[in-house]
Amino acid sequence: MGKKGICLWIVAAATWAFLTGCHKTGPEEVKEAPTGPEQVNLTVWGAAEDEELLQQIFNGFQARYGGQADFHITYGAQSESSCTDALMADLENGADVFAFADDQLNTLVAAGALEPIENPDVVQASNLPESVLAASVGNTLYARPLTADNGYFLYYHKGYFSKQDVASLEQVLAVAAENGKYFTMDWSSGWYVYSLFGNTGLTVGLNDDGITNFCTWNGTDGAIKGTDVARAMLRIAENPGFRTADDAGFVKGVKDGSVIAGVNGVWNAMAVKEAWGDDFAAAKLPYYTCAGQKVQMASFAGYKLIGVNAYTEHRQWAEKLAEWIANEENQKLRFRLRGQGPSNKNAAASKEVQDSPAIAALLEQSEFSCLQRIGGNFWEPVTEFSANMLAGNPSGEGLQEQLDVMVEGVTAP
Image 1 (spheres, rainbow, N blue to C red):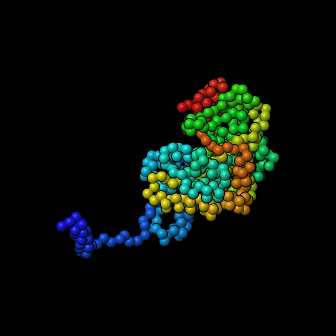
Image 2: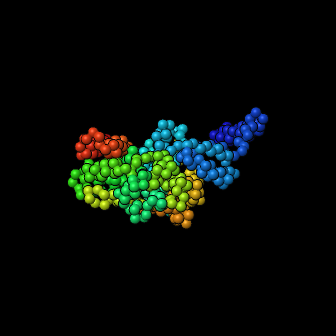
Image 3: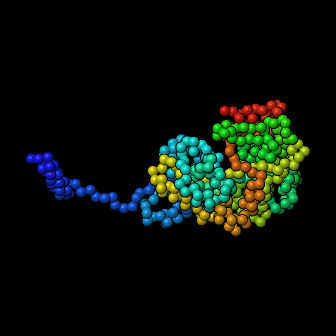
C-alpha cells in the first residue's frame, strides 16, 4: 500500500472511531448544565449608624439587578475611621465592598487592597473635583467618592449667640461662661487640634514617601511661633466656658442643655437639630487671638469613599454594588436619612442640600480647610501635648521643649 493509501486508511479509521465514540450516549455520561441564576454573596462594611440606610440601598439594588443573579448581601458594622485596620487583619476574607475615610487610601493601595476604577471618566464627571482628588493616588482613581462632608465647623444655639458673636472664639467662650454653659471641642484628637495650628504659618503634612510626616509646629522664626499657639491653648483651656468633649460628650451636652456651641461635623446635625429646634444654627469656625493677631481657625477636609476589595470573588457585581451605593439618588437618600453631604455634583446642588445649615457652614469653612494627608505617627504625640495644655501644664515644663518633643514624635520614621 502506498503512502497515500496508508494516509487515507488512517483518516478513515480515525473518523470511524470519532463517530462511534459520539454515539456513546449512555445515561451515566450525560452531564446536566447548571440551572438557576448565579449565586452572588457579598459582604458590605459600613458605619453602624448607616444600617437602615444601607438596607434600603441593598433593597433597591436587588430590585434593579435581581433577575440577573441570586444576591445574598450581608451588612457588617465597621467604622470608616478604622476600616483599614480591620481589613488588613484578613484582607482576602474581608468585606467585598467597604466604606472608609479618604486618609486611609494610600495605605489600602500600597497593600494591594484596591485596584484602579475601570470607568474613571464617569466618576470624575459626576463628582466634586476635591472628592475625586481624595479618591486618587497620583492621577489614578481607586475608589468612588461617597460624601464630601467629613470636616468640621461650629454649631451654635441662636438663643444665646448672634452671628457677630460666633465670629470670635473669645466671644463664644465669654457668652458660654456668662450663662454657665460650655463651648466644646475635642482636644483628645489631633484632627481637631490642627484647627489651631493650620493658619498660623506652622505646617504639618505627609512626606513624599507616603509614610512619614514633616512638621514645623515647634517653629521659632515666623510671625507666629509654636509657643504662641501653646499659650493660646492654655488660655482657652482655663476659660470657664470651655470643655473638651468627643462626639458622645458633645451630643450629651447638647441634649442636656449644658453645651450651647461646639466644633463638630454633619454626622451629628440631626441630633443637634432635634435638641435645639428653631434655635439650631451653624457657621464656619471662628477666629481666635494668637500672638496679638486674629487667626482664622483651620480644618481638615475629609471625604468618605466606597471601595471594592481586590480579592473579591465577584468583582463585577461588587463594582456594580459600589457604584449603586455611591450614585446620585442614593447620595440624596443618604442626606435625607443621615444628613451627610453628597460628593455627587447634582446631589450637592439640590435645594434640600443647599438649605441645610450644617452643609452651608461646611462649605463656608472649606475655604480654610485642606485635604488630610497625615502619617500614623501624627496622632499620639499631638494628643499627649494637647492633654498637657488642657490640664494647664501642671509639670511646668517649658513650652518649647514640649513642642520639640511633640514634633520629634510626629516626624519619627
